[in-house]
Length: 113
Image (tube, rainbow, N blue to C red; front, side, top):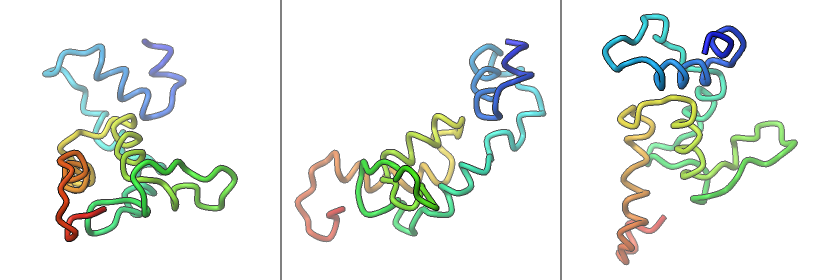
């Protein structure tokens, strides 16, 4: 674990510390460790409705100037969770409604994705 803390990127350090330490013993150096440049770019691209892009599962466009521009909602939420974001953080919380509407198979046209 010491090697990970010395050499890994911030999201991997966060996930390693969170996996190996008890919940009450989180060090104060974790403050802001999950707010990386990649996460900040994702959060900026989220719309007011809580979605990213125009699809659910679009993958980033390889070689594009801004690869996160075409990312889908499920992919963005998955990436934020992998980066160590809490599932109750505002960006993930805002994305719940459209994703749960999709799971509910609601046929109301006002709630179509």
